[in-house]
Image (cartoon, rainbow, N blue to C red; front, side, top):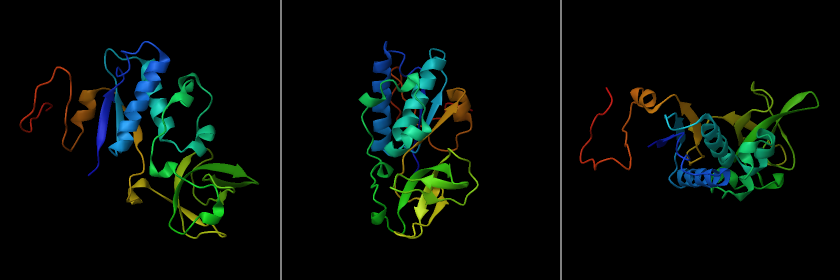
Amino acid sequence: MKLSIAIPDSSVSDESTQLGKSMKISLIARACAIFRVQTVYIYHESSGSDRDRSLIRTILKYLETPQYLRRGLFQKISELKFAGSLSPLKIPHHTYTSDSHKIKAGDIREGMIVFAKGRKFVDVGLDQIITYSGEDKEGKRVTMQFKTGYPELLAKQISRNEIKQYWGYEVKESANLRTLLSGWNSNVILTTKKGKTIHKVQKYFD
């Protein structure tokens, strides 16, 4: 079963400082990792702001990204001012070795496409970069699976759908909650401080 959540861009509006907002987003990210959420949707709400939406999006993506890729994928921006104070996530692709001798056939790693010596390679956090033969551009994050271990280190690009274990979450955005739910084709659980206990499945959006 695939689990997704939707959070409003007003989720951190009750925090008055950027540190407080960042810490709250970190807790959301940690909960997503614990409960194996696969997609986080951020939707606009009247009490939300563009600044908070950008902060939520950036920190959620940053925390989900393996540590060895963060410097290459994220610039030094104000939204990540307190990134060093945020708790790490225990996602499988965050646990890694930089020793290429320990790589085995079948191992999966997140990587970033880099350009060197006139060719494209992938940085997967090892002590050497590996050959890349795909069509994605430099700077793109990709998921790679090793076909052979050390010393050949041949790998192919795969999609997350091919990975059986939990492999982190994606972050997407929606104009508003109604737009998101109107195109949803699965079960929905709505929560609010003003809500009532649901005893049966009910349809709220036509």
